[in-house]
Length: 459
Ligand SMILES: C=C(O[C@@H]1C=C(C(=O)O)C=C[C@H]1O)C(=O)O
Image 1 (tube, protein in one colour):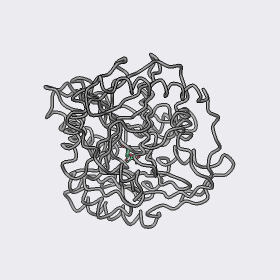
Image 2 (cartoon, protein in one colour):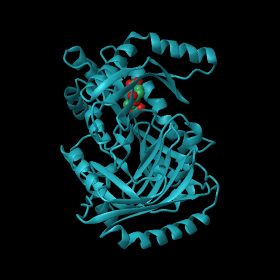
Image 3 (cartoon, helix red, strand yellow):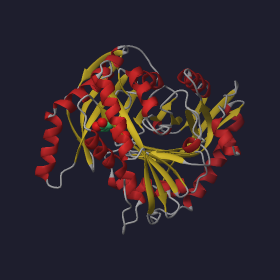
C-alpha cells in the first residue's frame, strides 16, 4: 500500500484542542475542471441539479470509518471537527465534509476499491463553491490551538490559492475521449440470465419481494481517462443529474452522474424520492410519450416502485411527519423512471447522516425485505459493489446536507474503468428485458469514454 492510500484509510482522529479555521473570498468564475485537474488527491466534486457546485482538493480534515458502527464513528468525529469553527465567508461557503460510504458496512478496500474505506469524508484544504449568487474560493485548516494561531497561515494560503487560480485558464479545452479497446461484463449475459432466473425462483418461493441485481462492465481504454474532462462533458449531456467525484487517495476515482437523491436535509425539512422502473426515451415525442405511459400503466413497475415509496415513507415516519407527492415520470437524457417525491418535517433536530443510515440502502438499491435481499445479492453477484449504489454527498457542522445514490457510476484510473448498472428484479421480471435495461444505465459514462469515431462493443 503506498502512502497516500494509507493516509486515506486512516481516520484522522480529530485532535481535542484543534480549531477549524476557514476563509472564503469571492472570485471570478473559473473552470472547475481546470481547478480539479491541477489538484492532487484527495479530490472531491459535488454538483446538484439544484445549482450548488463544490470542488475540493487536499484535506484540512479527513474522517474514515468501517464496520457496523461506521455512522456513529462518523458523527462523533464530525462533531469534534466542527466543535470549534472560525469561518469568515458567506453561508454558501461554510465548511462541509464531502465523501461517501460503501454499500456494505463491512466493505474491505481491495481490488477495484483499493483506497476506498467503508466511509470516507474530507473537508477540503482548498475549495471552490459555485451557486447562482457567485463563485468563492475557500481555504481551511484544522490545526491544534486557537483560531488566532492559524488565521495568518490561512489568509496567506488563501492569497496563494487565489494567485494559483489566476493562472488557470477560464476555459480548459476539452481533451478527446480516450477511446475503448475492450469491454467485458461481469457477469456476461448467459451468467446474468442464470442469476436473474435464480433470483426470480427465490422470489416465487415466497418471502422475497424484490432484489436489485447489478453487473459491472470492465472497460479497457486506448488512452488514460481524464475524469475532470468527463465530468465537465456530463454537465452538458446530463444536466438533470447530480455529478460527483470521490478520489480519497492517489489511485482510482469513483464518479458519475446519478439521477437519484437519497436525502436532503435543511434544518428540519427533508426531501427525498422513490425512483424505480425504467423505460427508454423515444426517438419521437409520440414514442417518448408512449414509453412514459407504459411506465405509468405497467402493473409490474407500479408495484415495484410502490414498494420503494412505502418503505422510504415508513422509515421517515420514525422521525416526523411525511408527505407523499404525486407519482410521475422523471425524464433523463437517455432513460425515464417512475418517481414519487417524498417530503418530511422532522419532530426534532437530526444529523443528515442519521437519515442516510436509516434509508440506505433503499429498496431501489437493495430490495425487500432488506436483509433477505442483501443476503441474496451477496450470494449472487459476481463483483464487489464497493461504493456503487451507496450514499455520496456532503454534510456541514449543523448536520444539514445532501446525498445522492452512487448509480450510473464508475471507478476509473489510468486506462481502465469499471462501470456499474443494476435493476430491480421482481417475480414477473424477464431476464432478457433486464439485460437490455442494464445497457442505458452505463451509457452516460460509456459515451464519454468511446471515441467519437467508433463505439466499442458493449456486451
Ligand atoms: C440500480 C440502478 O438504478 C435503479 C433501478 C431502477 C430500476 O430497476 O428500474 C431504476 C432506477 C434506480 O433506482 C442503477 O442505475 O444501477
